[in-house]
Length: 371
Image: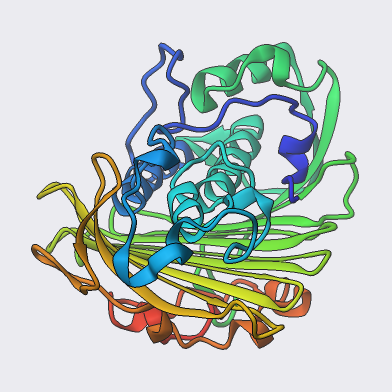
């Protein structure tokens, strides 16, 4: 399964929690005009859309009647890959658990860790990396100490003193069609054969980030926050070997406190889709819909739907799209043709002109991929 390259040699790295680990005594900045502050804000928005289900035991699920035995089926009959558990309930539950390799939260946390560590290691002014032609940053003990305090990593998990990272920071604000202010390119081998790219705009009115990795598994992560509209959006796409492809997206409206995220996976021509709708700060319910398409046509399952109590993940109301103030959506409403769009060429085709295409809880289900 995928490991972002920079994190790959940071064995045992702590997962980002508000850009800081729970045992880190340094309080991270929340100034969204800095990289670390923007990441802190992004993390808080994601947590609002994707409930943390890591501490909820799978056995606490009640049987979903309209899903019959499918909801709790053991084995891999209705689940994409072992990382997501053995049943639809595990697939949904594990997406919110950042310790489950391959889950939505696992991938987004890895992306943010990489961005936090990358930007912290570079010369910067007021929390924003300085412009530079192709150069090399050497990871000294001083730089590593800043990484520890800013990103919450353990010092022992960082590379040895003297490790070189090649990088370049460009101003792309005036480039035709650009949606970003700066671009940072990285070469983890210390040269200028750049494979990792980070675009960003960080102002008091707009946070917009794009991170791409070109390796064995190609991936891209988009984050956007517009305070005036009260909208936060993210999108993550990965094309891996096997084949194994995933696509995640989410949106949170601060004006309504409503949010929605979608998790889609494909392994060996089998497809799963989960659509989860939430209402932040007003209750303990969320709506879940799940579908599974077995290429062999023996285990297909369409639009299981229920209102779930997030305090113990029991079924509150069966076979419904209404959960208090939440109006849920069926998994089949997610109509983007990801089977075609999620490939390495598309993922790595993003550039300074590429942004998220959806802007509401409705068109998150129908808009094409970021371009």
